[in-house]
Image 1 (cartoon, helix red, strand yellow):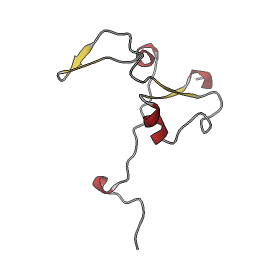
Image 2: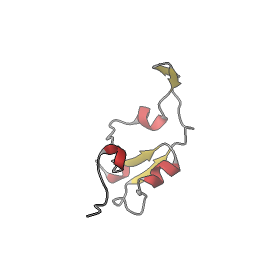
Image 3: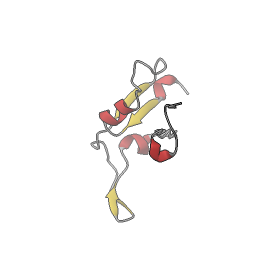
Length: 84
């Protein structure tokens, strides 16, 4: 896959900033993008009583690699820093 065809994608700029990923740390040619809930061209769909739609970048792409945010706070049962 050419790097020019790879995007790191998030809904809002603040969500992307929270990952600490930006164009400066990505491999050459890979770009970041946010859709800001403004780029959905498909008809509405209903999921568990909620009306939603997918953004164009998801409906036009051929593959998606989902990388969820890994949390390390106390609710998850992990500790980021040991106090010993």
